[in-house]
Image (cartoon, rainbow, N blue to C red; front, side, top):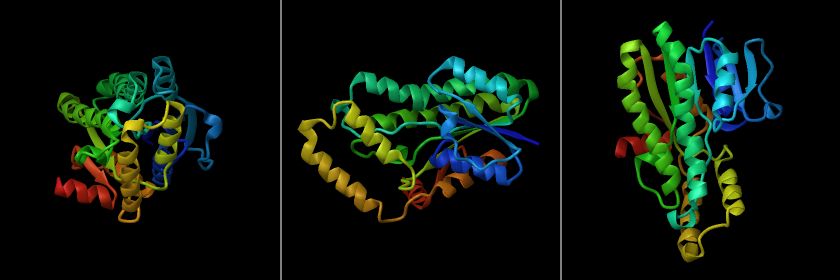
Length: 251
């Protein structure tokens, strides 16, 4: 039985990804900062572990507890909506610590075992906002664009060891807590920059209108991640969701 370790499984994409692998008979190590928030269905194939992707010791402990990891899914991340000028450097560092540095740290934690076994797959969950520039997402987009670049270069480094690396790029998913969590973060960090008040309201209205068109579901993302994990012909950058596919084809 193969083992997948997934970060950020309490809600949204991570939870659905875990459900998808469980349905296929995999041994799933679902990690989250607070295991008491777990809502995954009970299964003998499931193990829930604490993991804070911003803490090196937490990552190392989870990987050690998981045992041999055949597939790592780097899903944990945080959202952000604000102009560059309205984003403090403390917030910038926090976003990159989770969305970018945490991905690198988790990769580094599982790679020794994968190299020794000369097999393994790493799937990094990025974002379709990396496919075209969008206002108020500049810092978030930068953190995810770095994941794309990391994925493509690491794939070349690790291929000689039999290790594949791919990134899944989800579109907008109203079913997740991205918008709610991002707004909570903004409120806790001073709100939107007042100089951009009108522009911000116009942009948010356009985003709301876009949510009425083709969007991405958590199931779309789970299916794309499972494909990336199991199909060696998967491209290194794989869009997930109708809107993401449209952006990918039109970039």
